[in-house]
Structures are given as C-alpha cells and as structure tokens.
Length: 369
Image 1 (cartoon, rainbow, N blue to C red):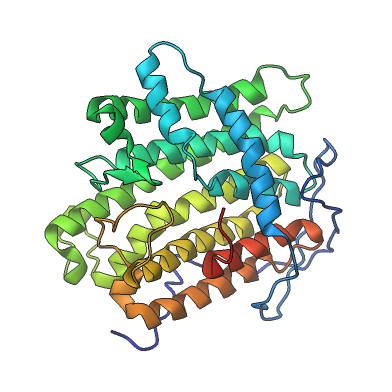
Image 2: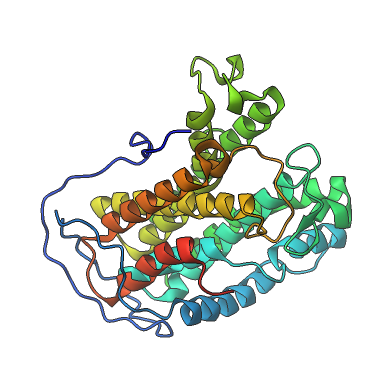
C-alpha cells in the first residue's frame, strides 16, 4: 500500500476564475426566504481552506428538513392501484431511518441563493425517489444481494424480486413527472421555474442515473467483483480503458456515490438561480462530499461498524479502506474535506454554513439522525 496517497485530480479538478464581490445572505434554518431568488455572488479566494467551520446547528436543521420532506413524499407516493406496487414503492421511499441526504443537500444549495425552501421541495423529493429506486435495484440478488436495508427487509425480501423490480422501475419516471408537474402545471404559481430550468433539472438527473453515471458505477462494481479486477486488470469489459486496483475503486465510488451528491448540489443551484461559475463550484463540492462520505463508510466497515444504511457488509469490493489501507483512506478523506471546503470559499453569508457543516459531518458523524 502507498504511504502517501493522492487524490485523482482528473476526477476532482480545480477552477480558477476572476474575483467577484460577495453578497451576504440573511439565513435561518427554519425561515422560508423571499420567493424571488437572489444571487450569491462568488468571490474567488486564493487562501488555503480552513478545516474548521463556523458553528452551525446541523442536527436541528437536518431533522427539521426530514420532517418536511417526509410529508411531501407521503403525498407524492400515495397508495393506489396497483396497490402492491405502490406499497413496495412506499416501503423504500418512506423507510424509517432514511437520512434524506440528497434532498437536504439540494435544499441547502437552493437556500444559499436566497430562494425559498418551498421552491426546492419538488426537486428534493424527486431526488429521494431516484435514490430509493437505485437502492431497490442495488439490493437485488443479481446486484449487491442485500437481504436487509435500514434494519428491515430489503424491498425484494419483503415483496418479491418481481415486485421490487417494478417498484424501482416506477419510481424513476415518477421522479421526473413530479418535477414537471410541480413546476410546469401553472405558470402563474409562485413555485414555478422557467421551462429552461426544468429541462436542466431533468437532464442533470437523467445524466446522473444513466449509462455514464450510476449505471456505469454499478456495472464496473459488478464485473470487477466477478473478475477479481480490483486486484489486477479490469479486462476488456471496459472498452479501451484498462483500469487497475485503486483507479477502478475511485471510478466505482465516484460513479455510485459521488455523482448523486453532485447532482443534488447542482439541482439545488439550478432551482436557486445560480450562475454557471457558482454551479461548477457546487458541482465539484457535491462530488467531493459524496466520495468523502463513502470513504468514511469504508473505513467504518473495515473497523467493524455498520454502514450508513444499517445493512450488513456490502458485497462490493470497491473500498478505499481496502485499496489504500485505513490510514491511507483517512489521509484521502482529509484531502477530500479540504477540497470540498475550497469550493465553498467564494460563497459568503450565513447561507453557506450548512454546506460547510455537511463536510465536517461526513467525516465526524458526530450525531445520529
């Protein structure tokens, strides 16, 4: 194992840009702000990022948002015909113990730009539907073969493999319909986005889920496990890109976990009215946080703890802790934390505090949700 691991900078590039004046935001975790989005102007800073963050009550903020999101999801996935499919959908979407990390990250980035929380909720719920669908399919015997999820039977264990596949299949289009229905049904409604923004949301989510996103990550994970690729060469399954051990681990974790956090941050930025430069910083922030979260999960698993979804040891062999060793993975985690905070340096005002706090929580896990 290498004693001094380094980040793959092709996955986590840096951005240089001209300085811009900051626009401080007023913010309270329980306050719905003005319905007119205000830009948080990004001011480039050359200073090294601090590993300490200003004090913020992330636990209270997180729990209050979970309550709001759960109410919205309960209404968005009602029991109707065919009842067994909807019961299976609700089994995972409304599962007790769900942390709602994707929707909360979406809402936090939206609120960063002064937009009201209510504007982000449809997108936030759609992201949770996408996450739930991916969990249902990942748990299948032909995939990760997980019998339990969050302390209770996984979807296929509770409803059968056929119903679980259909439930996952139904949640993906429901997520897109939820976005379009919420934002396009009434152009005079105060939660309506422009059609251009709605198209960007749909495109961002579709790209995240698709064959060059989460599907690619699952493909690489499945076949690398079957072929023992993480100990050697990935083989011709991967076109002309021959990936070995650590490089393949990075790619799998990036695609299975990093892209969803990236998508959540970007979608919140789209809804909030971010400009392109701001969006790119948040894109890299989200990806770094998503990978960081999984690196810490890998470390905890090797040390004997449960993973964050409350399941048994995962079938996947794509583990930073096994590829780099625990100490090497810890060094990588610190590098990811620094990188994520660097991407936030140009944002000013209290609205950025939740995003800094997410980074520290990803490493410290200093409270239970």
